[in-house]
Length: 240
Image 1: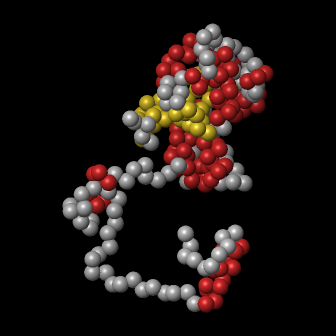
Image 2: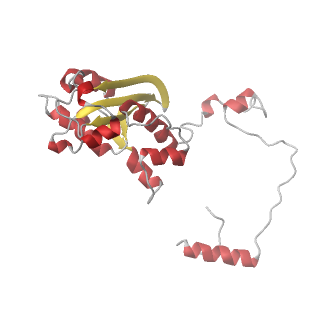
Image 3: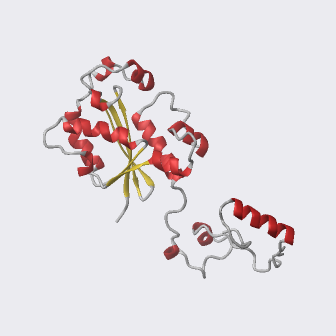
């Protein structure tokens, strides 16, 4: 079965949700088997309360604009259908999930977000595991992973979800499958379309033998000392 993931982001009137702050924007993009499908979900919302100045400075969505947008109760059905049975990828998921659950709790019989989705993955937690002790905001990750976020002057839920999709794919990067089923070694000669498509680079058959240089005693001793320093006690060994 194809793996469906929804990369999601929200904007709000402020924080926290427990003090009555509301959603003002939801943006989400669809991935199937780690590929963009072109499908997305985007909506602005009437929060039925003023936007805090601090939040306005972040996303630029003012009260007069939001007053003409639909209320969450009017779009909840289409939103749930878009995310249903998918894995959600959210940066700092606790924040966004908390706000969505707060909106759902205002409506009778809606339950929680977890009732509708297959699971939630926090890309911030993934980034902290991969880059401990470093800044792992979306902008910081874009710089570190060479992802273009030049259009991100203000935060916007749809734009941020699109950027986050690129960040998530880079964080969890690499080939999803080796596609051995599609590879025919009898046809994949060096430089052939089959070899290129399979991602295989072949060395020429008449290449010279590789020269092996063994470490001397001093190098072996230095290597052993380095392993001890790293907590890999034991006799000198080839680095794993």
